[in-house]
Image (cartoon, rainbow, N blue to C red; front, top):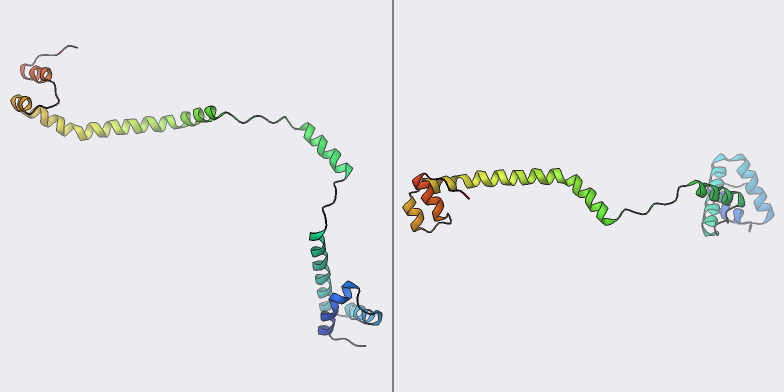
Length: 154
């Protein structure tokens, strides 16, 4: 009985399952011994069958040797340390952010002085009578001291 490769590859599933009659199985074995392509297809199909069967199989129990080694390795490990408290984490973060916060405070103070300087200079250049009449937030003592050249001691 001579077989062509297409016939062999169609019959491989029955060949691997063992449901093929004896004389057909012998003919397929003879063909697989001569044809490298069909032999590769048969191996691939056999491996696929093993992988599918293995995925449904239960996991094997670990051996005593493995469990002994695992227990020994766990005994050699240092005991677990508790996680740091939230307050400690916040303090660490605050210490890292302190230089950045100081730089931001400096930038804000310089920029506010920079933008407030023209308004302050305009108040100083205005006549004192206008400041008193317009009820500016500057205290009367400061305005009178500026007019008379006196210094105010606090």
